[in-house]
Image (cartoon, rainbow over all chains, first blue to last red; front, side, top):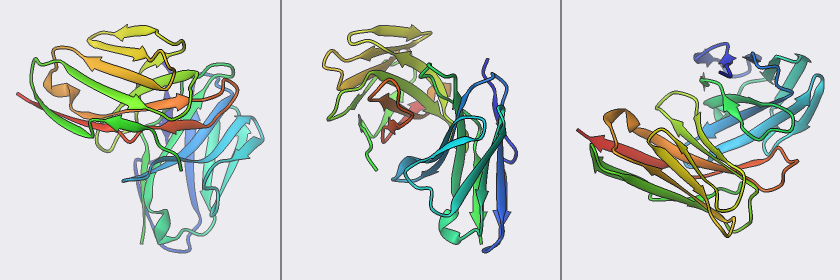
Length: 112
Length: 112
């Protein structure tokens, strides 16, 4: 079974803080994704990484950056958290050439 | 961003009943995925479809890739209380892309 884990299930941060969300997958997948999920807006892609040190901006990259130094780990960084970044953050992975995307349990981030 | 239309938006059913839901798009897809998401959790992949007309089962779940390639259907037979959750579809328009389009979700509530 594919396993995608996220470092925190719930996180509360203050406005202006730098926030790190970590995601690890154990299936040697090349591709990894970061989404945010908001009511009425569905899932929106923030960043995609197709391999180590490789990344592509998604639909809403503003205010976020990512890091992929190792194949199994994909980090999402909020440089200076703002209240409009309060959301559910979901990490996902898939194998290169495959289209089945597997999600982690999510991190519910609240920025106050 | 673009979202796929799912119908119905929500439904209450009695335990033991069969359930049908669908997902429609204005454009053609090459891959359809169906997920279930419990409150506060990440989506879990249920079924993947790759070919127009394909019918695939996973236990009591059966999904179909529409002939027009613009829709997909999910059926749940003999529903049980743990089927409660949000079901959503995801489509991939081009084989090499990483941009999934997600459905708006169908919220299922099962009355025991």
